[in-house]
Amino acid sequence: MPGRRIALTTLVVRDYDEAIGWYRDKLGFHLLEDTPLSPGKRWVVMAPENRAPGALLLARAASEEQSAAVGNQAGGRVFLFLHTDNFQRDYIAMREAGVMFHEDPREEPYGTVAVFSDLYGNLWDLLQPKSQVT
Image (cartoon, rainbow, N blue to C red; front, side, top):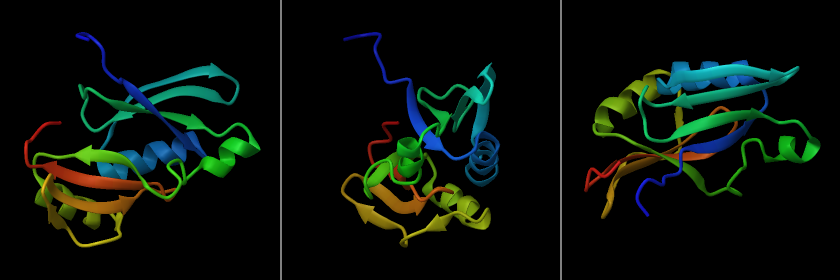
């Protein structure tokens, strides 16, 4: 259906400011919105680019169940896919910023990829698709 897209993906975090700092300083993400909603709750949206079609909604864990999901939102599988138009540039910049990669870059039928983890341990793919579909 035209006009529909997934706009936000919720990422459960321990602390808003800790997560904002990591995604900004390590991955170069932009803080698109940081709006207080109630005491202890904020609407925090970050994205790789200012006008990116998809973004992360950072949500501070508010219960034991949510806290248990921090860093393991996909049950140990790769959770999120960060597409790039220049794998080497971003791989080098991320490594220099201290991002932990779990493997060397590899070529797959769908593109160049390497798995990394965020500050909480969620697994991500840095991926330059062969088709350049982002």
